[in-house]
Image (cartoon, rainbow, N blue to C red; front, side):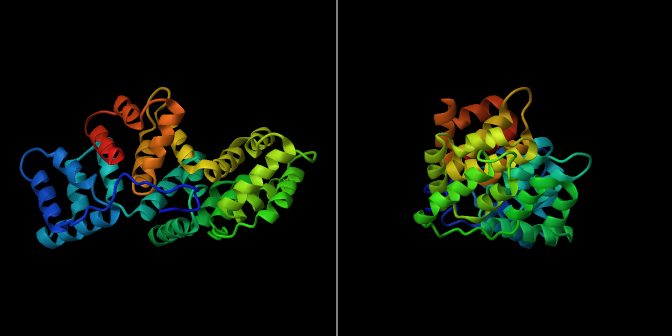
Length: 321
């Protein structure tokens, strides 16, 4: 489907036609009965069903066997493979709410996770995540963000949580004036007016902002991304650059996040799992195309080189589609 992203979204995991959740439940039960576990059978079912279909399998498993599928999976599996399977078995808004909670738990905050989840989604997705967070933790997401972040970065995340970006209107006549406002708030003054950056980046539709960025380049001779890069620092820069990058090309933003999760020493497995699980039913096809363009190798190749065993098989199953 076409969306505010500026491209037609291509998922790699689609709902299976003529899905039979009860038969799927039977395959999963057999895979976990007796000695040893048939991981290949579990991967075969769960990596090729939509999130809604996996929830139906969960219910049919309980109905057919009087058992909790998630508990059974937990007792049979371990490590990162278990983590990925449990992510698949959790409805996406709740899974992302749990990831936000985890990013704020304990000492230190994983700002990159907060940015990846909150600065890249449309109103409807954000509202679903907020509701799931409130329902699960009995606390408002905004309140936890306020307690865990500060300053302009906190204001950016709270703005995203308003879930009230205009997602439809795009009046080209407004673009030059908005571009001037951005210019005056940044390069055109001593010090940066972060609040104005925040207001404009969190209020207008993606198509509108793309026009504003085009106008900005005409005024300034360089991109607004360059301005953010030179004007801002730290967490706020991370957040605003994510908003900017997603407006320009959301698939490229996620391709870079996937690449970074596998770059250098050791894989940030948690991020890799989250990115694959959360994008495979939306636009993983687009992300794969951008990945290949940006890094001259396929995403599948990168995952194969960077992971092993059952986790590798599961992720490849979801990314290949």
